[in-house]
Image (cartoon, rainbow, N blue to C red; front, top):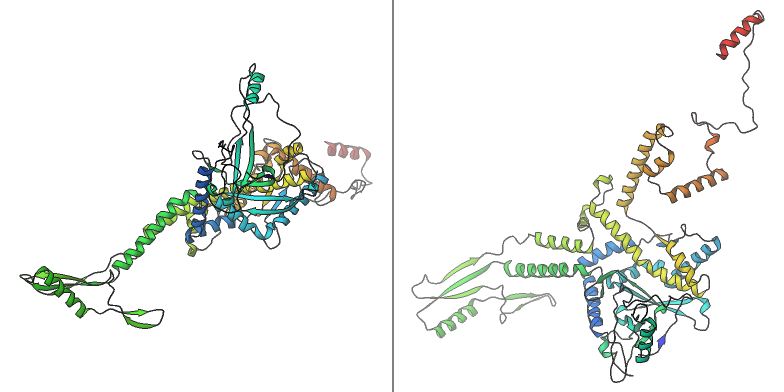
Length: 552
């Protein structure tokens, strides 16, 4: 191999030497452990897996060129990435991150820097499409080797056909293996394999048998793991250890659709016209003479004038015979003589039920609702009861795609923050769990469903409100009726309290619960109720008696 290129980010905290296992890390990226040796030394032999992966990516890209498959892919990409005129397709969400405002601001700025380097706002559709079709995405993180603290300078896309992720077990000498066994013989008697992870880049997209050989004739470049952003689809063939694309399930359906379409075209071309059958009486002529006579009759009555679309002329094309021409059959003496009959054309040429079936099968394989095939059906927003279950499944599928694709930003942001000394590798492990990404959502069906669910909850809340404080507590109502989590309740309480302080909403304690009118402020006197006028003619006894009645 050529030299190891790039940089590495090593955490200060290493695993304990007592934490060992004979089993390597989980293979979630489709890479395997490869060990090989030759006369010149050890090298990495990845031809078998790489050849299959190379062919798979080529097949996926050919599938994307098919109009039906391309339409389904565009439906998925348009749902996942919504390009708005003013808003960016994706934003970082740090509401759940327990950190200072200064750190949050720095994270947002670095995230914006990464998007600007990639020009993600303009190229988001193409980036997600490449990842969806190929099933993997490679980006080279270019930094200034002399000034790594300045962060990422450039992010360069790498064709997956030129890159391969390798996990190789380091070979140890005999003395090292014996020492490891002696050190662990009292505990586990297991030697943990030491795994080296790196990427292999070949400038030309060809099979590695042409580029990766033992000795010094290699053309591949070893690149450090931390120098590459590697995002996969998450679909792995467990039998072969290959990363699959989301188009893999549709390979068979697309091939079947192509064959059905081709067979339908051939059938229509061959059976569409009406053809004549000429029965020529050849008497008792010998076989050779009969055939010669039949050819003469064919040439005499044959009329094959064709229209040349290139020149606009009508030309004679008698020397060629096509499958749509008439039939000429000899008939022996004793038959019915020369006869001409008509062979009718094919029937039911307008039936497309088989084509429609395989189109629906293709869309089902790609996870796109079948209702989207009929573009002439229009778009109707009614009640949620009218929404097809396929649309809800499709919405959840797009959500999973977004989460998987967002791992690209997580890796780039990690490198950027660590290189600029904003966070440490140990701190990042804690922060990354609370960093989320907010995509612009454009699924009207899911939005309609959420709106109707909220209306139903508010209607139930209005009915149960008189019983709050008697039979139901406010916390129970918020958890079971409004479906608010503990975190949402705490956050909403803080927002309400802050808005009351800011004067955005009135204080509930300062509002009359019956009339809804604000109560007089503290220190202000409203209208003082006047005592009833006392008739001077009344005696003191009568006054005292009336006062006691009023008190009672």
